[in-house]
Amino acid sequence: ERKEKKESIAACLNNLCLTHFRKGEYQKALEYGLMAEKLFKESNNFEGQGMAYNNLGLIYFEMSLFSEALECQFKALKIKEDTNNKSSIANTLGNIGMIFTKLFNLEKALEYSTEGLKLREEINDMRGISYSYNEIGRIYDKMNDFDKAIWYLSESIRIKRELSILSGLPPSLENLGMVYLKQKKYEDAEKCLFEAKK
Image (cartoon, rainbow, N blue to C red; front, side, top):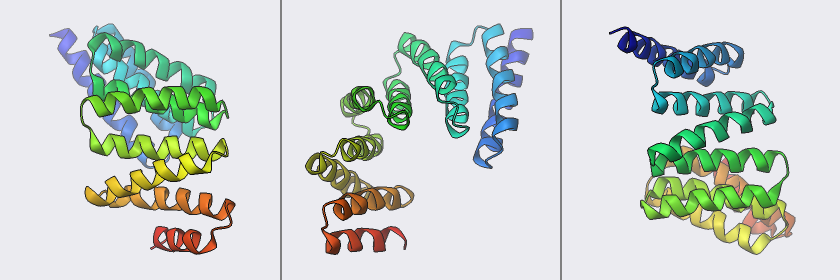
């Protein structure tokens, strides 16, 4: 019963962590996240612990503490690989890719993002695939491989339109518009950027 109580409290703390994270209150989110992780660990709830590490990684990322973010995401990945939850593993691989993009380690970013994409394709997670395409498109853009960037970003937009993922459309349109701008394709850039700000 004590174990169940700890797990219940850890779940509450985890929810509070996410609430503060969404409000941009990262210090508070971090406090709750660290407490949640500790209680999940004490009650041997590995799935909960993996989730807590994932959240902590996202918080550190937003705080620009990238080495801490990576450490947490790798801890989450190890736990998730033991549970073999492909969707969850793919999300964490995507998070790791995102951190490497921010650190401008583009080869590593591409490696982890592509690995995440493959898992999402295996389980036919179209929503996840659209986000992977967007991230991979951004990486190719930073590598100045504009043809590949355009292909991935266009596919991301196509899937998001098909699934009506409206909140995910503006960032992809903006990313694509910026690639067109670098190529001096002003008409295409204007079309994307105009739609992105709607």
